[in-house]
Amino acid sequence: MKKPLLAAVLLSLISGAAYAGSAFSDAKDSVTYRQAAFQLIRHNMADIADMLKGEVSYDAARVTSRASALATLTTLPWEAFTVPGTEQGGGDAKAEIWQNLQDFNNRADKLATDALALKAAADSGEQAEIRKAFGTFARNCKACHDDYKN
Image (cartoon, rainbow, N blue to C red; front, top):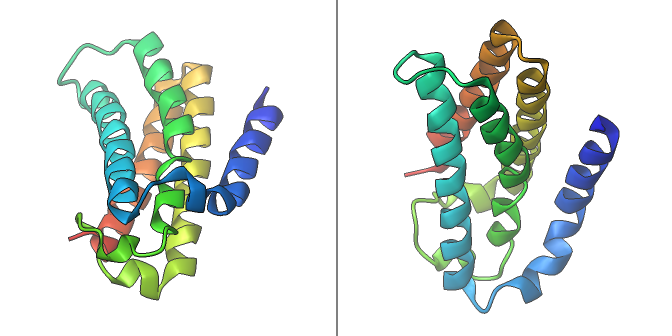
């Protein structure tokens, strides 16, 4: 099960830029798309964080559902950064993204990989593993925000 999912994620990451030119009507549309994808990532991530912090009741099935969503969602926003003019389209993205696009893309790949690891941990049901995988995921997310988000 893990190999087909990993293959699908990698294929989407590799092929995303090829489709980006036709996926959006303009740069503003690509900004709207990526912001929506990041909002969904934030929502799923926050729910897991709240459960791990004990702010809401821990629900293993919900953690698994949220982790599954993150495994998909973390593959979505990146193609929207390749649309010509998107760096002028607004949003909270810093200009450094396009000045360091390779680093940014590497971080995107790592976030997707971290999400797959979180999904595997959630599938195991082991809270210690979930906590560890979530920490890795969250630190990578924050590090990218620190460098590339206003």
